[in-house]
Image (cartoon, rainbow, N blue to C red; front, top):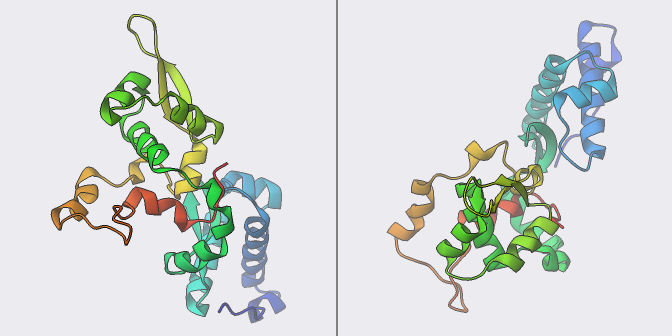
Length: 220
């Protein structure tokens, strides 16, 4: 549970009062925002005086959330700030949003998205070569969900299209940038201890599969 008591420093005329008010403004903006907002955007909306002021306020809020045992934090995603529940509450929130399961990605879509994420910019032919099946419909579906986009054309015969991920991809998977993607060594660790399977005999979710559950964001 998160304490909602108003800090005493907001009831005085000390410099702390101004910092507390700024933090409260940042908190209100992020609470109402549907997508990550850059520090600059938050500063403009709240007329707060710059990026450094916003970053300091976010740090102040996170310290308070941790101290009072809140179930959420302000996290940096895709170059912006967003409120997000802590990972230990994922299972509860997944059950809450189970009615939206139709918005989840299929195994084929996740495999294709992973290839694009790690190999971008990548040709459709390369994706199909890795998966061993045609991927045209899957790529179109991912584009409709705004998870991938056309980023250019290859310098070869026919000038085929190149695909890459979008800012929306970072938001859905809770990544600050592509550098936060799990490295190949991390992905191989489960395999070293042997494959696991669920009750139906299907392999359990990979780290990439679990990532979008960290936020309850509809990728459609």
